[in-house]
Image 1 (spheres, rainbow, N blue to C red):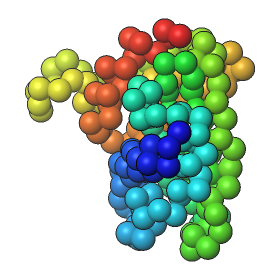
Image 2 (cartoon, one colour):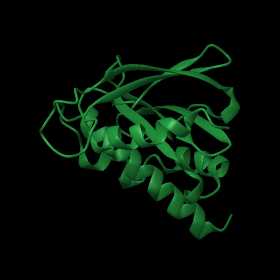
Image 3 (cartoon, one colour):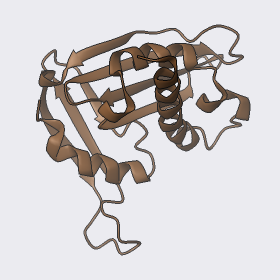
Image 4 (cartoon, rainbow, N blue to C red):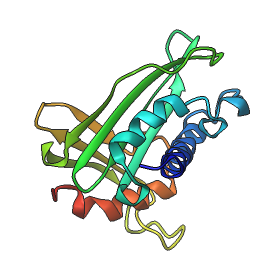
Length: 174
C-alpha cells in the first residue's frame, strides 16, 4: 500500500467516524479539536487501514465515540465490512488526547457472520422524505457468539441508515 493510499483510507475512516461522533456527542460540549478529523485518532485508524487495504474494498463502515463512564476519557469503536472480512476496532483515549488511543484492531473472515436480526425499522407510512428507511437497527451475530448492533450510534436516524439498508442484502454473502 502506498503512503497516499493509506492517508486517503485514514481520512475516509475518520470522516465516517466523525458522522457518528457528531450524533453521539451532540448533547455535550464536543471540542472541535477532539473530532476524528483533527487527526488524534490517526494512529488507531492506521491499524484499521492496514487490514482494509483500500477504500474501494469498504462496503460498509459504522462506528461510535462517546465519553467513558469515568468522564476522563473517550471510548469508541469502528466496524468495517469488506467483501472478505469484518474489521472490528475498539479504542480508549484520554479526554485531553495526550496519550495515543489504545485498543484492539482485529479482522475476522466475513464468513464468520452467521445471522442478522432486524430490531427496528421505520414505518412505510413515514412521508418525511423519499429515502426509506429513516431508521434501522440490525444485530449482526458472529460464529464466536459475539454480537454487534448497527448502526453503531442508533439514537437518531441518519443517512447511514439508508447505507445499512442498501448493504444488508449482501452482508451474509462471503
